[in-house]
Length: 140
Image 1 (tube, rainbow, N blue to C red):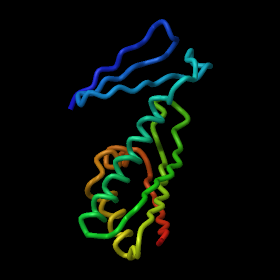
Image 2: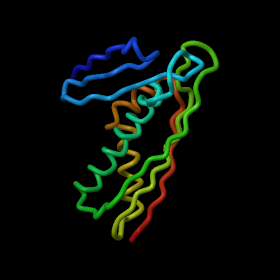
Image 3: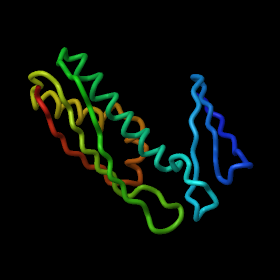
């Protein structure tokens, strides 16, 4: 896996990341830090990536179990250290999983497997952050 991040020096603290898979995304800083507040902060991208990693796992596990999952949302709340480096110290995941006749045990198992076995991003961030999660199931 590879990624190249370039500073766009004509735009304050705007950075453009190009991934090995051929995608591009931008990151920016707050106005107080020299940015223009025109894109997500790098730490927001890290948090979003962690949510995406966990949601991906949950959907894949449920689909492999032949459950009819139709939607998966993860709302993340994070706290950071007050001093540098301002690592994440707490991250709470609130999963909202929708589908037809989803068994609670299957959804709980999928979330637990993501957190305990499959989600690489969560595993890394768990080195500094207390990780908690809640599950809400919406059967349609």
